[in-house]
Amino acid sequence: MALVTATAELGSSRTPGRQWVVSLKRNDGRRLVIAGNLSQANAEHLAERVNELLDDRPGLARSCLTCDKPIDQPTTGRPRLYCSDACKHVAHRNRLAQGR
Image 1: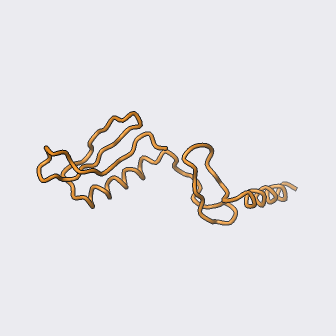
Image 2: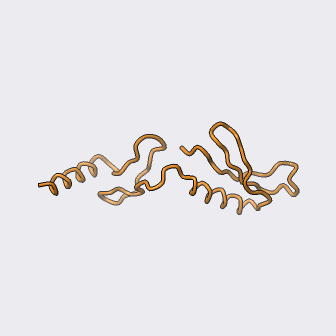
Image 3: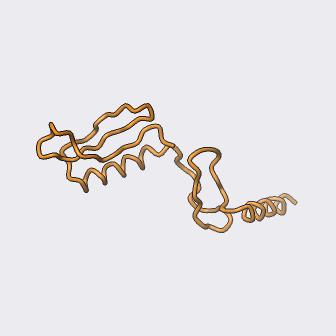
């Protein structure tokens, strides 16, 4: 889970025209506004792009190394390289065969 998350939200009542803002929220609850006076679509797009940049698990395998199926990565723990135990066993057998 990311330590910092960007969110798009409607600005405060002090914001003229009630424009949308993008803010960074930390796990401890602190918040920092990084952009303001945006349309809803622009704010949501910017928050999505910032979250992609802040991804705390870069370089993870997005697909199985054996069969190329997509992998649903857990939010904690060791990243998965294979979609199932069967693919993990196939990869192990292939590594053993290459070693002989």
